[in-house]
Amino acid sequence: MQRILVVNDEPVIRELISEIVFNLGYEVLSVGNGKKAINFFQNGGEASLVITDRRMPEMLGEELTSWVTRNRKIPVIMVTGDDLEVVGPVAHAAGASEVLGKGHLTIELPAAIKSVIGPPGMLLA
Image 1 (cartoon, rainbow, N blue to C red):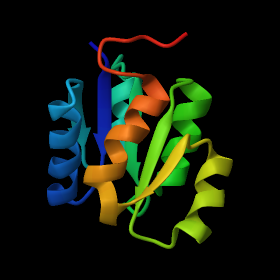
Image 2 (image 1 turned 30 degrees about the vertical axis):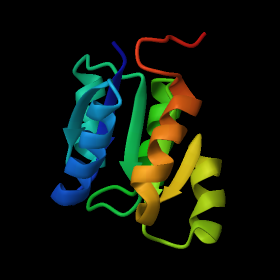
Image 3 (image 1 turned 135 degrees about the vertical axis):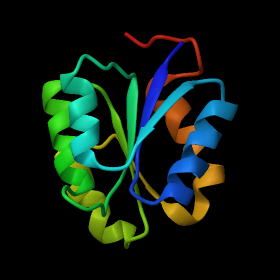
Image 4 (image 1 turned 180 degrees about the vertical axis):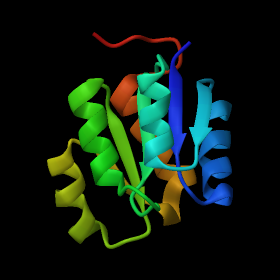
């Protein structure tokens, strides 16, 4: 089963994203910031995808995205409440596969996940 790591400092948003991911049939783990996500990977944790917030204490989402895509070579979806026209280019330059606004997560996130890593149980080459 594909595992998705959700990284968000807002418990309500983290839980919403985790619930969406779980209901789609993926295994889900979550942490509250980018440093905890990096620790997860450095301690042997594995994931098929990272879904991260942009604005978090200690580390911005684009910093985490850059680290993940450079060191783990797995895709990242960034979620933001900021202006997508401003954040999009920065997030994509850091390596994000998709950038989504928080306002439409229940609609846009399932399609973005399936586009990036395929349906649950499917491993993309």
